[in-house]
Length: 357
Image 1 (cartoon, rainbow, N blue to C red):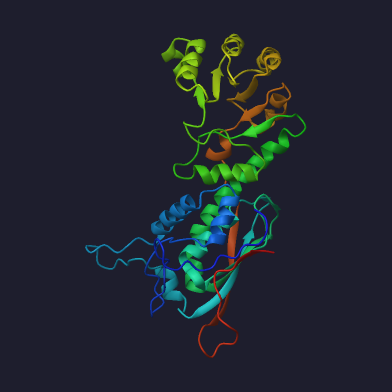
Image 2 (cartoon, rainbow, N blue to C red):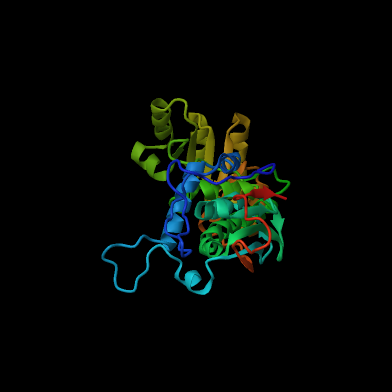
């Protein structure tokens, strides 16, 4: 993401932003329409803004479900009970999103979109880091200013996404660093959390990794069960090529003999599954003269990453990037400010200004 961007409030259009009533209650949870600048920032990151809006809306709705007509006595509706009870509705303040650990940050425009989705014109978000930046304990990555109740209501959703995506970027960076200088690249897999694939694969890119296919339609990957069903590697490859002649085809191989068969069949890319370094080198010797790329997969760890990359393979496929990355610890440090009103000094916020400093 490059350059400053300043989302203005989403007014009207498809869906409505949550608004505070006369008592300061947040009564609706709709992501609504993102401003052109916010949509542009997400699109620049390679994300579908409408898809991000959907994720945010569902995440906010988990914390603020609608009140059902037959709800049990004592249950509240779309209200943050704790913040409503402890925070004056007129209180305006600011907070800092701060890293508690060293890592690589990812998801800052997504976190900004959470605050904008919930608070509309009343919030200001200033990004002080960029996705892909290395951060250390104490690094402030963003600042928010607005009604304290709303900031605290949006806090967990924003942090859930930001910490998760930053954890993926951090783990990816460790793998990328481990194979630096070998010529091999780190790639992800489809082992992603349902509904979060686009965001998680974006985080991989922030960490310096590359994306494998996004869906089953982008490319064909002939795995062992396909080989069994088709009657062999060559037969499976021929079937896919005949049915989808323009589609890239990758073939999973368990042995060097299968690699030779796949190369002879015309495969574009071969996935070497659970092979030893010796077998990987033998596979490279077969595939390289034919211009066929190789991807190592299965049983990979950071400890052996450099040795595997040194065999000459083009990629290391690492499912752990998305299915096992620990969250990067970030938090919101709140500085309660002042009550809003005609007697308060200073002008009210002009809108949800999100900038990079």
